[in-house]
Image (tube, rainbow, N blue to C red; front, side, top):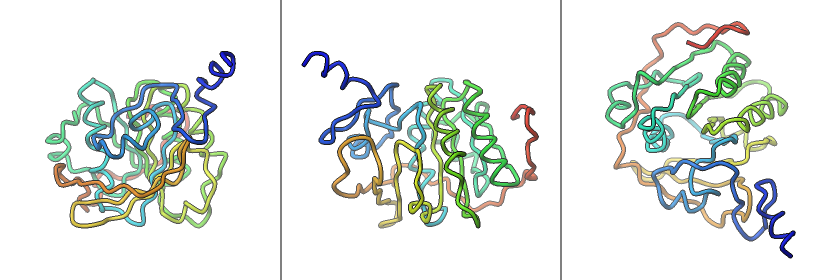
Length: 234
């Protein structure tokens, strides 16, 4: 029994009636109700998280602000890749995010975005990598997502990937998959589609009113460009 108990401590194994253990420390989301439903008590590190949204500007970035601000206060770098709208700098500062340690990359194509995300993960300098993959004619190759998951495993980085709601019909190597939708003003409903361990029984309702929204619909002013392989992200 002692050998079995030791084996069950491995993060790759878990019981079906409990939340799985985690290999690296999680980052609290800032929403206790959500943290109680996430293995490790927060956004996982060293693993890929997918957040599926039907549209942008519903408060999806505001949901991440407390965790991103916590990482920023610890001096960690953040890279945002292919955001659909230019981040609203004054609100980010007010939320506690240091702009001097925030890099925004605007690749031209989805393949460039996937490459940039992978390079950011392999750089080993980021506390968080946030990426957006818009709807496309073809599904994102599973192998491309698997590369991101493998790259994330080598670092204690929070990896958050926004994808369209339709991607929920596709298989994914992400260890955590959420679907979010707007509820009342300043509120979100979160459905946990996939997590390691006990399946979620009910959706989670988050109150964003205590956080300022940053999902402003300002078009990015920086011209988009693809980043050639081997060129540093700056």
